[in-house]
Length: 318
Image (cartoon, rainbow, N blue to C red; front, side, top):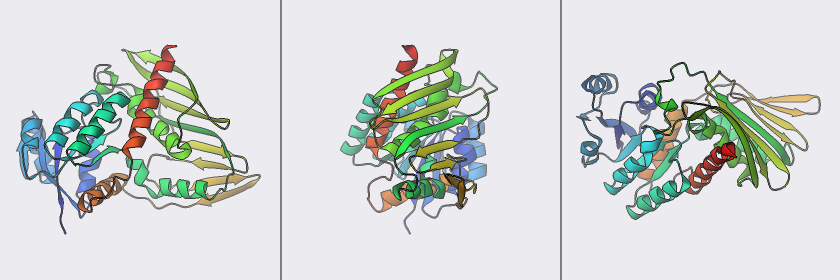
């Protein structure tokens, strides 16, 4: 079968620890080229993942006609520039979340991708897990009735404040880094934009290191987003409805922890298969390239999510 030759812009931790190991498990993707200014990182990448080509600049990689698609794990503030450059070189693009720092930038990126006839997708890997599929299935079945509240959190302890996630200039902050997952999840479930938003944050070095947002949706639905660099969370999401409640542990991971349904005093556990969420994501994106189908995570959703992230941060300032 035809395989996608991937180019990777930089040797970031998420690429090194998660995406590239997952790529080696797929049948449809090949780690073909990588670009980095560091000879040491290039050597490590070749040794670990068998890249056939190495480049010292991103532009050189994009000029390689054998590269079919590009994975972009760069700092958030650099996404727009390199997504657009890659698209104009005819490369399909899988870009880490958030796709950009403003929905207007996302719309510009989408326009360029369409003009250049390339696929573009925001990399929310949890969307491809059996866990997420089971949540959607249960909600569509009406098992908890009308949704009234959603509470979702994602936090971890960041020891090093020299980390790029603490850089305002590079688009850092806990909401951009991990809070975007609860934002995406809530939007996936409700398929709507909130009518009103309130938020509070703890800031250090110009970025939010902890944030809580309260969102009110049409139909008297409330949702909360909690994210932080100040301590580890269990990544718990609770969806409460008129006839029951779903509790989703490891919401954004790929473990085999069951999803729990509570209806009165009755508890039902729904088992889910563990998986490699990054592998599933890569396979889904490669499939849409090879078969020329729409990307499974719509760009309209990316616009809505980036708008909501911006509005939450603006609400903090009020």
